[in-house]
Image (cartoon, rainbow, N blue to C red):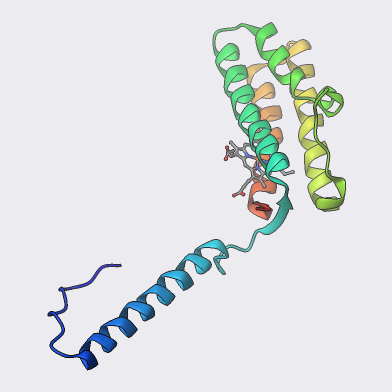
Length: 163
Ligand code: HEC
């Protein structure tokens, strides 16, 4: 709470009461603004509610996606095609059967599932393009298509973890 100046010390009980009320009012305001922060009305993304375990698993998975794309791009830039291919393949449809994978189909929408599958298939397509010795711009084009799934889902959904 930012106040422009400290209130003078109370001279009588009546003024003390006023200060208490002012304190209560600012506490309510603070509480209200924290609620507003949690559900910002300008945030139109659809919430997906997960358990704390699912939530941190999924965000870890997300960070892995970013790392894989970065690693593949770095490898491609140095001509290390096999490293790039492996990085993409590991994130492809094979990942849908990876041990330890969490699944919560009843908590997501059909659109979510469509984008998730499309993303994994696009990883396979980038790996295939690399294996087929496509040109750099063809591989870039495939990567751009893959990243449309990242962006499309991020613009549509946000995550909420249950306490
Ligand atoms: C099917 C939906 C979906 C797809 C596809 C998707 N994401 Fe996400 N991702 C999310 C959601 C939802 C969040 C959490 C956003 C929030 O709550 O504000 C997230 C969060 C992230 C984060 C933040 C991780 C953290 O630790 O906070 C990264 C990084 C990320 N995604 C990368 C990617 C990349 C890269 C791709 C594509 C290769 C991708 N995501 C594809 C849904 C998706």
